[in-house]
Image (cartoon, rainbow, N blue to C red; front, side, top):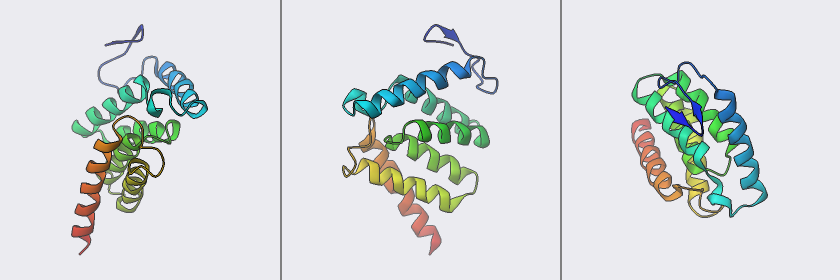
Length: 140
């Protein structure tokens, strides 16, 4: 797969130029912090990383998905979608409390109190709220 002029291996197990994605993400995240209106706090690098998280979860590579989701949430703290995928990865690893905290952070970011949660904020709000309701039902 060719992304921004660099070739990536499709499996994400071997990160050919992963450092380039991380450098681009860091620059993108700092631009979003300096200018909150810039791309609603989420850009192509975040979308690419969260797409990888989704693919890794679908292929049952939960630990690697967690690594990518945690990095996305760290680099894009205003992104509700990053918190959603981090919560999902944590739940898949059996870390229910940490997953619930991440889903709650997603809801907090996306409900408008912090600025809408970036690109996909309303979608992430619905997904996180549904998962939190399910977790509450299971606790009973």
